[in-house]
Length: 101
Image (cartoon, rainbow, N blue to C red; front, side, top):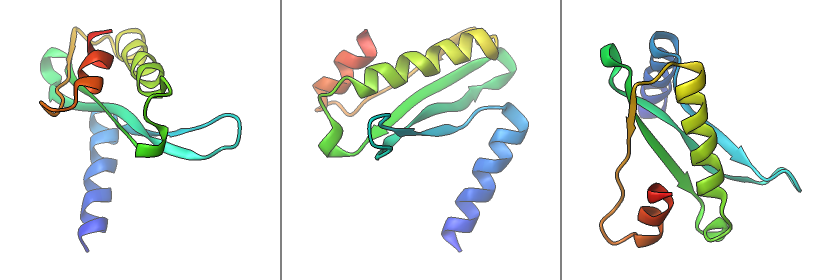
């Protein structure tokens, strides 16, 4: 029931705002490594939240940075975003460095 509710909410977000989180796969072997995408923050002002989540075994490979850049480009080039923001866990300094790039 909780999964169905979450999925329904995600589909509604996609339909209304044209944004979502997308799965990330390795090109070499098609392994699922995580996801990256956008959430509406102030959609009327075209401000969105950037996020990404990677499986631990894929940390340190530059995948978060690569996916983050793709999402940023999509937001500005395809959605006409005016601004993006993102946060990170205070103890996750690696994620902070990714966001600073």
